[in-house]
Image 1 (cartoon, rainbow, N blue to C red):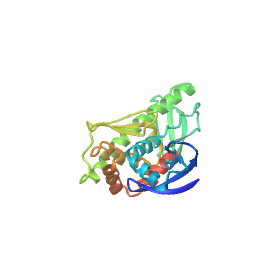
Image 2 (cartoon, helix red, strand yellow):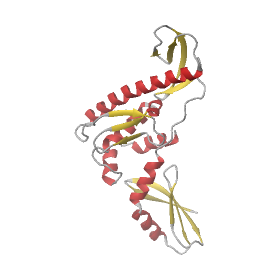
Image 3 (cartoon, helix red, strand yellow):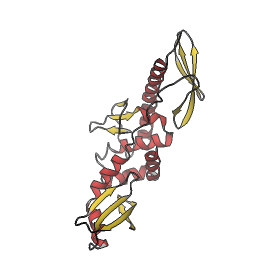
Image 4 (tube, rainbow, N blue to C red):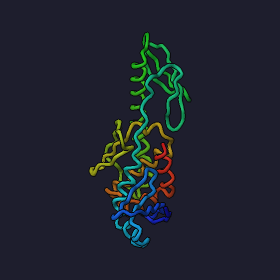
Length: 233
């Protein structure tokens, strides 16, 4: 097996070349974004590199799909003292009894106040509602803030919505509306900013072509490293 590098959308991508007695060329995008090409013994290297360049758009689409990490599920059982992720750190659940039955974050502790006895299911539901409310507030505020910072290159978004998504961290609709995965709130702020900028760039280019990645790189020169960290979970 030989290793080469190829430039895809201004990024150096590693390619593993596997030779065999097969008759056709097959190209694969690995989970980390690297490539593997399987080819007959007689096909020269330059032909394989040409084949890869012809597949640039397909490779970009597959690498984008690979970045849609399925979020981790909620812990099955939550109780007083359970640790849950929030903005890249761990916060502790503190169950308290209060007639107001409110949920409030104080430092690194999330106080979930309940009336009477609380079941694990009811506690999980309260935490879920808190996550959703915080995600709506944080994503809306941060999206408009970043759009304003880059107003010379990015238009203002339409509506900002939040819901659970199985495979995407965010998605931008042609009408300018942006949807974020609630689970993204568990990631550190730098990774959240990457997803927000990623979606805002789609307000300009509704694809993952070269011009899209050129714009993304101008706004986030380290986007490759951020994307790698997000893929690793």
